[in-house]
Image 1 (cartoon, rainbow, N blue to C red):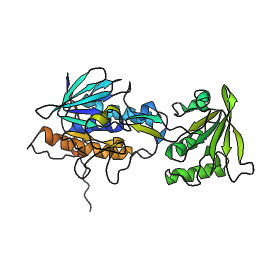
Image 2: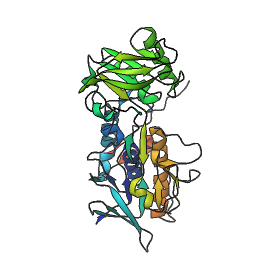
Image 3: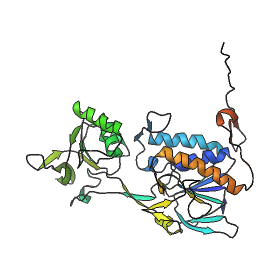
Image 4: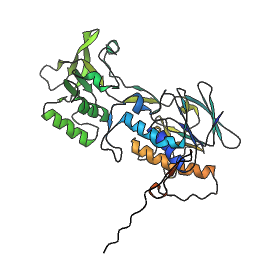
Length: 353
């Protein structure tokens, strides 16, 4: 039986940052993740994807963000159960919980924080009749290693942030990048839309809208995609390529979490965002992309905020009646579980004459 103060389901960015925030409160954390390594989607799906909305980092690769978060929280010595899925949740008579994985590993904690991101997921695939025959032979749904596309002709389909970001990123790697979207308007960040337009104007990206990829051409390996575009004189025509990457998002599935008695709305866990992101089960929280509430934004930085408030609430549950005075790390420093201490820099007061 693994015992801890806060049991975190999911070792993505939100779960890892929760370890740091809990550590500041002298609370111990243990994390469960079905993936074999920490980082969640950042490590498994897009390790080399640049992220632009992390405060203090104009640009950071997803894998580097994971490494930084691991370095930040290691002083608090979190435990990990990796490569195992959290299957069952049992509430004990004293109000604590036992969570058992699919491999039978049991975890005991007074607080459970679900930070499972999108849960288990699979890419949304376009309805193209011969799509599966080209999977791993020119069709990919996830970009793990951008260098794989160096010098190749790449067609990307989609209208969200992933499609925009990867089109921008691969424009310096691939010999040719074509972005196809069924609408003229994109759903991604305005800055990314502007950047794609700039690259189109300079000839670094071919932009085809409104249009759809309706067929694939080749024998064993992809040679071209068939594009349907009402405004084009031929209606349907071929675009030569080595790789077709449809980026239409992921279909999330909560998996066993959906059987825990939690209140679910549109495949996400409802929480009380007015207080502390607690679910309908007292002592069980949901933070990050896995939760939902009015005004919810699925951003990593929002998950960091939710993790911080969750830890404050967890402290009060674990230490009822004990008053905690918030101290800024710039003043108080950081105490690790290993006895080390990072001192805050001494304040310098300059007298104004």
